[in-house]
Length: 67
Image 1 (cartoon, helix red, strand yellow):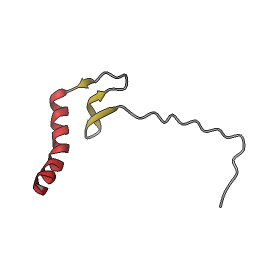
Image 2: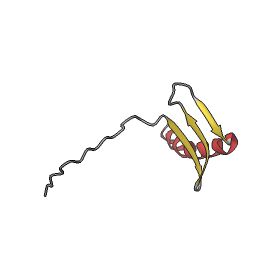
Image 3: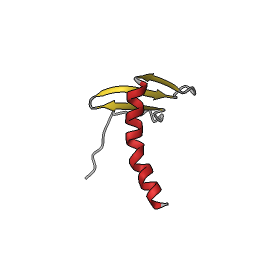
């Protein structure tokens, strides 16, 4: 089934997101942003590092098991 849309314009900004946010439950605790070509961090560095490494560790463990 197809429908014809008349008078409808869709504009999508397809720019990639050059940032990474670290979330602890519902709260953003840190953010890496390199959208302007310069890497910047804002937020709680210690809490963000814990979250980043808790994300990376299972992948590294799996990688190391494959040896």
